[in-house]
Length: 282
Image 1 (cartoon, helix red, strand yellow):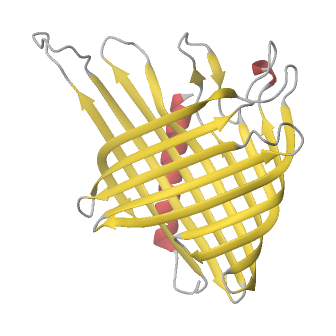
Image 2 (spheres, one colour):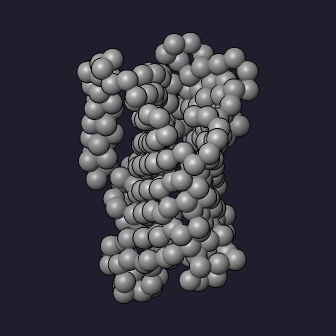
């Protein structure tokens, strides 16, 4: 499965670069930008090292691509995110995932007044590779879980770097393979089921700013309340990406994600990835 995931990673990388090379100036209303990054981490200790430690090597691939449309009263923002990472610890025969995300966000709006738009949004999230727990038991894989959100709303768009969308009528679909719910619930899907449908309200916000020259911070927040089941328990998904540009091809990245979803686990899930590597902007 890891070979399949890596193949997908490089396929999307090639697709993005090819798209950049074949685009022409005849498309006047579309703007696109993106970054491909390869991050590497490595630690090594010889047997005489008394401070303790285990040699390891890790690598992360990331693709962040924006494709936006603006013509008259119509605005349409699209963001594609792909991330995959592996780590190998000395003495351990297996590799372990450090990152695994596949996400698409699409937000269409028609201007109402000023910086406000009537909107329709779509969000899709899943993973590419198999997930294992500490006992090496399979707990997830490609398209399991898969999350879909869709709904109309109102969109405040100050610029491409700051906007907020509120959808008071959001449909949410969660899909998992039946073998994950055979003996109990999984990712909010009840035992014996393969999907869960929810209906509620969502808020999505995006804010990107420059801390200083060549240092930028991207913030993405999604809040969701299910009208049909404990609406006071709001699902939270916050992602922060700090990007430090060293030169045209070298960069350092810090990615932090915090998730709270009481249907999956009644605790805050936190993920952090740091790396120094090669990036390509297009």
